[in-house]
Each structure stands twice: as structure tokens, then as C-alpha cells.
Length: 506
Ligand SMILES: Nc1ncnc2c1ncn2[C@@H]1O[C@H](COP(=O)(O)OP(=O)(O)OP(=O)(O)O)[C@@H](O)[C@H]1O
Ligand SMILES: [Mg+2]
Image: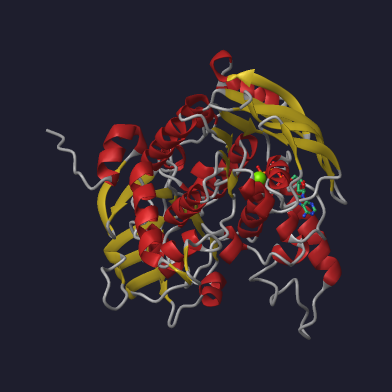
């Protein structure tokens, strides 16, 4: 075995509007976690899709363990011991966890799958990684955080020795990330290799051995982690200094614009997802909901935005919407940045110009009195959104599918803020967004607050909740178990509350 697990030699990939990879070369060693960082659209996912055989490069060579590899499909990559956990999950929603893990790689007993053997193997693997997962849960019933664990499990079940993780922690809580890192370190300690893509520089510092920085499709440099720092990495990525804290003045809350009274979200035969939650969000304040993913936050947001039935009362600017659905709620000037941007945020085959008016397309000024689309108006508006929100590339014709993850998120944030909502429900608003763009999105949200918008922020990123919120509600097992002010709490207290422990203040 050689020292080098994976070597990329001048990988180049051109798309119609961008040179996504411009002769990228670097190597990943056995026994190391190699981080790859760079702004949204820098070309990280494209590069990894090339390594995994999903995208064909125009030029360049991939060497695996000292041998030139001919990777034309994911099957080729898997055969070479390469596994990939994607930025966007690729699971079958209606199948169970076990079925998804086995899909395509089942141990055979004659022609039938030997489910018992498979189940045992997968259960052992779970134990080894230290993940908790119900093998019989259906994917569609799992929050994104848990779905991702299934993805990881799936690659390991296929005996990956080189594991590529494209923003694996975007959906994880700090505790879950810590567990993942522990696993990654033990995985490489056994002589394997990891390629780790992340926008969170703190994590990169914590988990990686070396870091390669990519900007505009090119390698800026590879550095030893212990010889660099987050500010230096940020500078290499963005080409300027980045401010990592939110600058905001104290809130001046006005009337309650969103009020939730004794809200329940239930499903027959299951524990209530939301169990009697009440709170208000007033004009000009940002109320954060913190919690470990899977404690009812997603369901709470879905109820408020008209995507899920509930019991209880929700008032939008004092009004109760009868038979709420997403469109009615939207008409009450409620905007929603959904946590799952592919399922709920964008129509992937629509161009940006259509995605930025989604949900308002049937109204003035986009449709005239006769019900016809006013194309010039739509184009002008779309152009303004992509410019204001720095969507790259600037095209309004490119379909959503072809944007990098962070840029897709900017399209959604741009759409939801540009319609001047009164109430903003923001779920994981900066997930997958690069540090420069997080700074930008946070500023826009604070600005909107200052103009009197009521913001409900739901985020698994404790940093984001602490930085952005004026008040924080902590959710645990469907209930609100605490209210704190960011300036009066700390990560430790928050962590305890999020774990269902009420710290005594005595
Ligand atoms: N299928 C495609 N067709 C056209 N352009 C594409 C396609 N896939 C990617 N691109 C473009 O290639 C560039 C690099 O995208 P990529 O997804 O690799 O970025 P990234 O570094 O992973 O960004 P992020 O941090 O936002 O995930 C982007 O400008 C993107 O719009
Ligand atoms: Mg990406």
C-alpha cells in the first residue's frame, strides 16, 4: 500500500456558465482527514462527484492507492473502496432505514436477501459507529439529521475505505457533530482516509489533518491544519477579511405578529410531535428555537406555515386562518425558509426566474388582470433578487438543480425576503452557506427585523441561534422547556436544556 490514498491530477470540468474545476490537483493520504473548503460555487461538490463517478471530467486523472483509476460510475468508485455522503441525500423516502442501507448491496441467500444476516451486520456497524437509529423507521419519518446517518451507514456497509463527506455536519447538532468526528478520527486511525467538505472552519480545525482551499475552481493551497487558523482559511477562501459575529442593536419589539396557543401536532398511535406549545413573536424581534434536531421543531414550523394539520390556535397578525394551507398562510405575509430546500424550497427543474416568484406567481405584479404572466416584470424582479442576494452564477435562466448548495439557499432566502414579509419563519437559514454569505444573510434578517418584521428562527446551529436571536426558546420532546436570553446564557446551559435537563440556577 502506498502512502497516498487518492490523488487528483489536473481535474477540469467546464459547465456552460462556469469553469467549475480548473485543473485541480492535490492528494489525500491514508490515515488523514483531508478537509476541502471554499466559497459556495467554488467547485467542491463537482470535484467530489467526479471522484465518485457521477460527473465526467473534461480532463484529468484520478489515482487510487498508487494506481490510475478509471471511474465511470459510482459502482466503479464503490468497487475501489470510495464511499460518498452527499450534500443532498439520495435515499428512498418510502423505504426503511435498513432497506436503504441494503439497497443494491444485499447479502444473498440463494436469490432471496438474507435479511437476518443483513440486519445483524448493520446493527453491529451501528454499534461500532455509535449512532442511534431505528432500522425499521421509514426515511420520510426521519428528520434530516437522522437521514444523514443513514447515508453514512450505507457507505460503510459497502466497505468504503476512502470516505467523502460533502458538508456532513450542516444538519447535525454540536453533540452529533462531536460523535461524527470521533467516528471519523477512529476511521482514519484504522488506516482509512476521509475527505471532509465543510463551511464551518471551527470543525475543520478540530477534525482535519490538512486543508485544501479552493476558490473559483482552482486550488489556492493545501495547508497543515495545525499551522493555520480560521481567519487565515477565511482569507484564502474569500480573498478578504470576514466578520464572524452579528452586528445588531437591542430589539424594540412591537405588537405580537405571530401567536401560537396550545399547539399540538399529533399522529395516530405515535407520541405527539408538538405537545402544547405556546409563544408569541412580536414585530421587530427575532425569537430563536433551539433544540436537538427531531424534538418537534420541524413539525412546529410545518404547522405554522400551513404544511401540516394541528390542534390549537395560531394567529397571524391577530387573525386566525381557517383551513390553513401554505398558500393562505403565505397570503398573510408569512415567508418561510424551509429546512429541506430541495423538497420544499425550490422546483429543481425550474429556472431561477420562476423559482424566485414561486408562491406569488399568481399575483400582481407577476400576473396581469387577465391572468397572464408578465414576463418582463418577472425577469426584472428575478434579476434584482439574484443581484441583491449575490446568487452565483448571476443567470436567471439556469435551473435550480444546477446551482451549488449555498447558492440554491441564497435563491430561497432572496425570494422569501424580497416579498417583504411581516412574519419570517426561518428554518436553518444558513445551512450550507459559506461564511461570507452567512454574514450577508444574517445582516439581511437583522435589517428586516429592524423594519418591524417578526422572525421565528429555528436552527440546529447553536452559534447561529445565540448570535441572531433576541430571545431563545428551547424545545425538547415537543415541548418548550426553557426560555433564555442569549446574553444571559452560555453554550453549556443551552446544551443541558437541549438535552432535557433543567439546570438549577440556585
Ligand atoms: N450540472 C450543472 N450544470 C451547470 N452548472 C453546474 C452544474 N453543476 C454545478 N454547476 C456549477 O458549477 C459551479 C460549482 O458548483 P459546486 O456545486 O461544485 O460548488 P460547491 O463548491 O460545492 O458550492 P457549495 O458550497 O455551495 O455547495 C457552480 O457555479 C455551479 O452552479
Ligand atoms: Mg457543494
